[in-house]
Length: 248
Image (cartoon, rainbow, N blue to C red; front, side):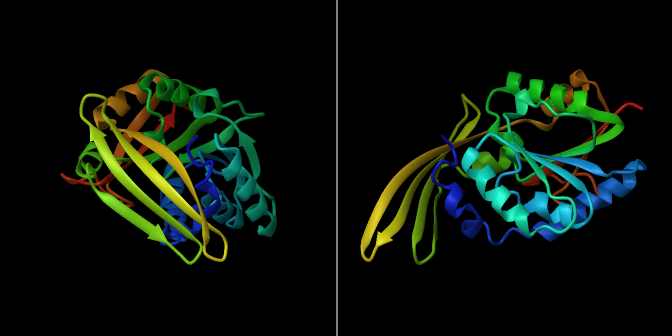
């Protein structure tokens, strides 16, 4: 399963992600929504870094994720949050089931691409729509097909003193899936290392395809934006943000 082994070193390997800047960008869209936003769902929250950042800014946060390992780290991280601590739920996107309504839902860092079956993503959009308040905001981003196609055949390495991750990306035009084969090495004692393997997959969703899914789920006022920009995407954009509203 994805993130079974990577979870423990995920934060170290993504230390360059500026979660404060991501939260700033989300808040710009919150302000535009003209709906008082208090309760926010962080869908596919991972280790909860963004969830906790938004909680520190005063939002009532719910985080949901499919990985129990990632959620365990998120719960530990949330202990240091002042105010209302986030609630974490172990759920797949397409099986989202909340105790009440939310004002906004965010799904960041290309988590949508990880749903590799379009029918399941369509169902996930429907579940988000169900739990949003009238007028509520849904905001998510994707790695674009151009980006995923461009990763084909590339080899990457992340490492620190005790962990090393070597991964290769392979893109299948027929399946529209970019597969990341990961070899993970963990230092156990002195010069002894343990090797684990994980496979991650991302589906290359076309923006127009996602717009159709959102409309079919009942969303309106659908907009696309460039990477953490308040403008429309430019040709060749590597990441696109979507906003959609539930009718009031």
